[in-house]
Image (cartoon, rainbow, N blue to C red):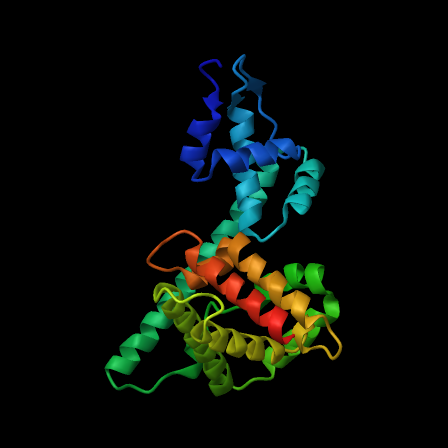
Length: 259
């Protein structure tokens, strides 16, 4: 190890991940160590850090490890690739800022007894940002069907849909924090509502007659744990991915017993 390298333990701590994860990335060729000490310890240089930053950014976008490997292999310029990531992050920052302002406006109106302005309530809730991701995972028809369904809703219907999503998230968190088991009646009741909600969204595999609903539900549960964007919806006081893991396990039990 030289002065321009960091140990695997140091990188894990700085990046907020684990040595086990970094070793796995190395074993599959995603993040090779820049050098290996005589004791077998892995060390990483500046180039490795840049590559790890890109890996974590792509994970935030919901890409799987094989897809990340393909992306990294296609892009020769690290700086150019990071510029693309930065553009996405800035767009996401803007979207979140708009959502925050929208929700704050709604809270102010509710507390003041003012009339809600429906046209202002959904600024930042732009489902089209996931167009490419949805088409990649489930096909262009899936996105087109869901997009048509969403755009055909009235403001009140969209508000009711958002309320349903919020209530599901709240009840999942409550069940997870209560100490209930994933196969408990409480958890399974929420899982049933969750699956009913999924099957009501046109374009998803759960809504297609004859579709693999069981596989879709189980796969989504796994994605809730793997993807921080979705896992954040089920964050509990225990921290980490505890809430998302509870949802995943409960959905798996429900799917295996009922689908």
